[in-house]
Image (cartoon, rainbow, N blue to C red; front, side, top):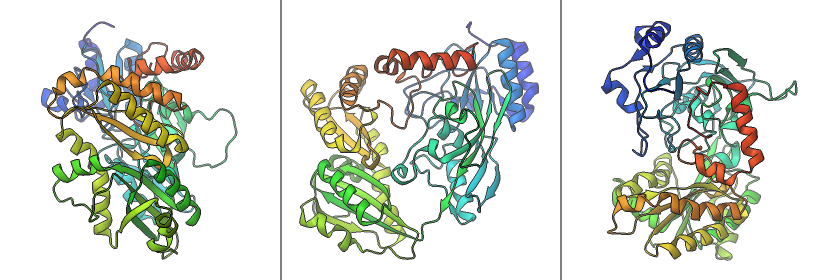
Length: 471
């Protein structure tokens, strides 16, 4: 595709979305042209922001007719460069941010119907206002958009109990690459009438079409929560504790996050208003949340952890006695990425393996990277309850950060080889984008990649939808 977008195409796009629906001002464009971590940068002659599904369809139809590439963008909070245009100037950025209406809530059907441009926290609040829970929750929930969450099959802290974005979506509305609108906005739990088409677009990162609306599952609001910050012996103890708590609570463990001491110390150093919940330092911790539909959690923390203390799995524990304390405990976990940035350069991995294999994976991967660079700092934290840890590698103290980041591909391959040895995935919840495109082709079978390419060719024969991402 040649660089630049012809003026006549830009004029047609202006007309399609009206004066409030586009901008070419460099200051307005700037936030949409880089990944939030600053790893990927691009350029575009125009940002279009349709206000309706019809306007999205008009934009896509024009681009299809003229062979103009489209980069769909939600809140641009992704970590793999999946929502950033290339540097040719020949791609337009299509933002869903103006499409932010809660279309309908059906408390009896436990569903909410939303525009794809709704901020995640607004969907959560709308559900709560109707006496229901929308459980998708992640650190960027105040700025990420639900369309982006679906396009990357976002996970977050509640996957253990409620599943990923894929499991929370009942229906979708999608503008196809030729501009047609597929209306799959159903709130049905049971429907075996043909292929489940919505599944093609969830996790496709805008390469097969533009998600413009969704029907999402709701759940009863928990009437009580028990939030614990526990010192644990090691990752093996974490897995054993998780299984024990799931048994003891009738599978009411909503979140189970692992935090190494190094990560906690980073947070305490760099994040104001944080403090160590426990009086003594330990090598490993777990942040556990149990949610109950009952007015009171039936067991107190002492009862729940009694066996774990006796068996040496848990070494100490702190319990949140009010919402303020609960928020303080979660701040420790949610601030790890921010604290890592303050420590210098890091090479990040968003990987998953079976929960039972997680301790062995963490040890083998740690040893593999330390064999190559002994002073490297391994910060492995996150959603161990659903088999997804963020296996991040921080530069050695005093090292050249830029030189360290240049070894990204080298350390990716080391870590990902270990992941695959445990039958895991190199992308658990952040998506593929540009960052893992070549890794996906390397690790997936030829049949798998051929099927993906066949679907891409069938739906997007001109290759205009988010080119250069995923495939």
